[in-house]
Each structure stands twice: as C-alpha cells, then as structure tokens.
Length: 181
Image (cartoon, rainbow, N blue to C red; front, top):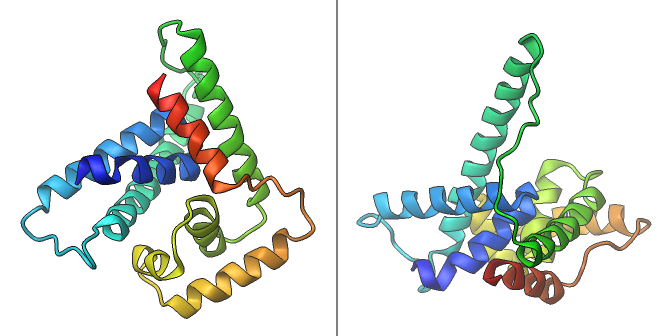
C-alpha cells in the first residue's frame, strides 16, 4: 500500500502545505494511521487512496491548527522568533530541486488564495493532483455534485487570474525529481 500510494499522498500533502518538510511529516502521519487501522480498512474499488487523502487532509488541518497556536504562543513570549528553522546539510542540487518544487506549489497556492476552503480543496485534488471528481468526493466526504459545483465556481473565479496552475504532469515531474535527488 505504501509503495503504491506514497507519491500521490506526498504530492497532495505538498500541494496543501507548500513545505517539503511538512509534507514528509504529513505523509508519515497518514501512513501511521493507515497502519493503525489496517484491520479495519475496506478498499473501495481496490484503492485506499481516497481514504489516505482524507487522513492526510485531517492531519494537515490538525498541523495547521497546532502551528497557528504555537505561533500565537511564541508571539506572546518576549524576544521570540517563531520562524526559526532546522539546519539541513548542504546538498545544493537537492535543495535547488526542492526549492523549485516548493516555488511551483507556492505559486499555485497563491493563485487559489481567493477561493474558499471548499473550492480550494477541490482544486488541489482535481486540478493540481489529477484526481477524478468521484474520488475527490470520497476523499472530502461530500457528494459528487458538490465537487462539480465547487470546481465550476473555482474555475470561474480563477478565469481572470494568472494561470499559475501548472499542468499536473509538469508539477509531478518536479516533485518526483526533487524527492529522488
């Protein structure tokens, strides 16, 4: 299950959070939950991907909530800097690939910033990750008609913007290249 779905789950997580490191953590959390629930999983049409992406969505929301609370806490402390990061080894090529992939994802997230969260979820799943409308509906726990209407509204809102929604294949190639380097 991991080998079959890890790339799709990673792409989804990266497109949600825009951070390579956070996406890797979300993937870990997602597959840990899958392991915990392995006896209760009932794959729909031989795939657990919609369920995995639902778990990833919940993990992302939990992480965003915790991060927001943490930043609020740090802002109340004297002389705190909530933006301190980790030190990574100097691997110029790998870092360059990751930066390019994160920049592409960040541009997509900026493009979708004017959408409400429901529309953004559908855009991330269907347009950025190439998921079908039925799978997106299962992932989000909503009806297919709702996915269609949200997608229609999102496309209408994005029609006048800079088309930064990079084709799925190009973005996926950047992400896979960066993961392998």
